Image (cartoon, rainbow, N blue to C red; front, side):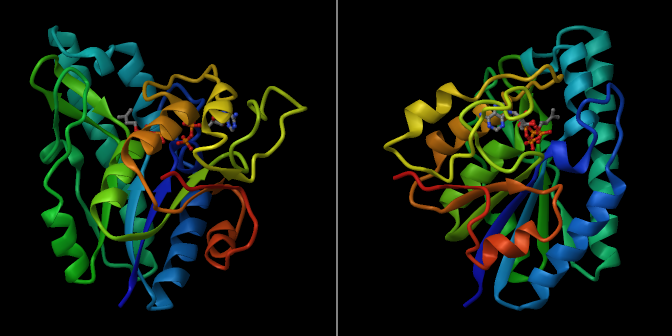
Length: 266
Ligand code: ADP
Ligand code: IPE
């Protein structure tokens, strides 16, 4: 029996997240595709990949307030443009995976997820199970989705990861971000920040206080949003939050090396 791994490629890893216009980290994407292929070739794991939006989604969502709905003609067009940009980023990733002979299948969440006043209420995951049964690698992403109260809203890839990890029998979740893990405060602005090797129910409330917003155009709550969606959705599934900008981190996590932050909530 193969074990299910869910990997989130953070927007900060696959794009230049500070850029006001879409800009992909092509070399990093190519390297990660190679590393993912090495894992796949071991024949031990089934994989689900979820990627973030970075500069392909957040700046436009923030500029037109698409995380808070769609009322004007301008917002309708911006929603469509954001959709196009996400498809472009997804296509860059799928191409990199295909170059490494990985049978990746794109599943845009907007085509099967609907929210209500920005709130996520799940989706039918059968299509994802079917893909896995056919040895395909489903690739989902944080996306703009239709919303029955607001017109549209945004779903984070982090929410999708938590939901799928809880619904499917998941061996491990790995979040690749642009920092080494979760720190006592933002390591980019506080030199005294210390890496937290383990998060459990015991230290959760203390940890959450150190997760502060950055100056980026982010509409899904950044590191704090990530951890809160894990707390809401995920129990008894081991999670690792590690640095995807560093080579071979994925392999290190799977070899149980002490890297990044490990989180287990129950
Ligand atoms: P991703 O795009 O990889 O999903 P986010 O942009 O949502 O990740 O969050 C990563 C950012 O969170 C880091 O670049 C870091 O600056 C910021 N951050 C804020 N507080 C913390 C903290 N306590 N520990 C780690 N990162 C933090
Ligand atoms: C955000 O998804 C989706 C859009 C803004 C369209 P994520 O929340 O998963 O993206 P990152 O990882 O923070 O960039």
